[in-house]
Image (cartoon, rainbow, N blue to C red; front, side, top):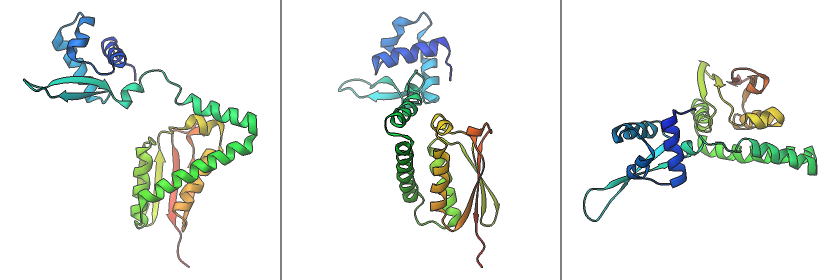
Length: 210
């Protein structure tokens, strides 16, 4: 998200200073203190910086400001590029089988986390908890109950698209994970962001008892 020049300057000053006060940053601006405070309040409200209250032995507390994880994310980084490069290096050194094994291990770890998160809920509760889990992981989940025992889930964002675009095993593993969690259900992948679609769409449907 691109910031205004003033806000970007504030973010940079806080990044360099780690934890700063209003007094620390004011000398770097020609606008009024009130204007600077408004920009800071906006950044706090948007979740890019955090406001800390520091108590003193005498007098009122004062406030310091530092970047949140979201704020640090505004600066250039290799968080998305590096994992892909590491997998490509692993494939070069040890072959594609090693990459597949590594991605499978990742799926098993994520499946265990998801199983712990959904617990022993019934079908409806398990689907809702799973959607909540994935939404918390950045997938921008939209869940719709189509009918009794039938849900449609759309993911409007893929936080690992750089990996899944290169290694389709990631998407296959995701389906395997859902199928393990919903072992008595039909799990269908209809669309995928890595194929150029606007969202990944899943159907999770209880199988009729015979």
